[in-house]
Length: 410
Image 1: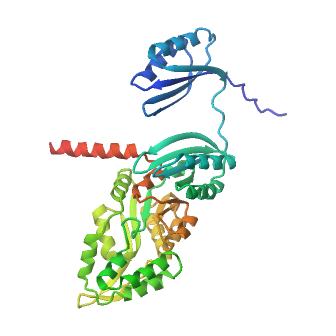
Image 2 (image 1 turned 90 degrees about the horizontal axis):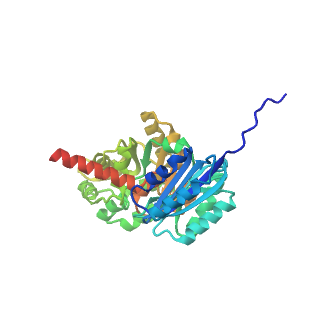
């Protein structure tokens, strides 16, 4: 005999939607107006855009609705707000399986981009359940909560649309794993910092064109990285080691780098760098930014104080970067699935693939195509938006820290 219990029929509910100019006290006033009717609160949603309020309250239907409607309309008249009261059955519809976060970035973000992305989501049988803004500058970042679509199907299709519309899009499966990310590992050259250190050294050595050509081919994946690195380093033979100090002083962090690291550290993340460049530069970056891990190649310096054109120790190449990510995670006791990797070149691909979230940052086409997501704006702190961290939260934390320092100094 089938003993399964039938689901109870949906309860009668009333949806109250309020529109108008936002000001303190509106929400409290609405609930006070509902209080005499002893109705249970089922759901609440509120959004404010440029000072305009949309407030939706779903309540259980009272035994007699005849008094509720006129009371709410009188309240709205007094408050100088528009109101809509609709009776119905049940709560929100049940979200379909396959919940996904879709983050859209644009500078600017254009309506045609949002239209094209929304159409593609619908064609993938997805429904947009919620939309909210993560940031308004230096880029506009919008997050869409989508249900009913397979994120593995959405990702490549939305990436193609975003590229055509000059926007960036990140697609991540919803769930606790997104919030569990606890280690972020970055490439250095053209990711954490602007430019390529080896090209700065080559400029001092008078061989910039030769080195830059080899670097470009290696980053596109046309040359074996280890062999190309040895070839480039050999061209630096005879360069005075003092040039390394000059390059250290001239290094420029990528815009947003300090904000990214500072915010991640506040939230308890561990942050590391791994580079096909050189420890003579990465170690100073580690100390300056307070990073937890750093790994790179080391240039050999002869007794005469000049570069020998050779490296010491194992080469940090494509496989070495992925191994470093796993090693950092193991040292910290963090599952690799809970890591984020950021890079721009072909030698970052294994690291991006190994991480729980691999981000191609202003990357070569071969990297953008294979990474989980791609960001093509020159602000490294946009990575925070992919983790669901808003610009408002970042600025509030900065302001609180400044106030704490000011109070301590007073």
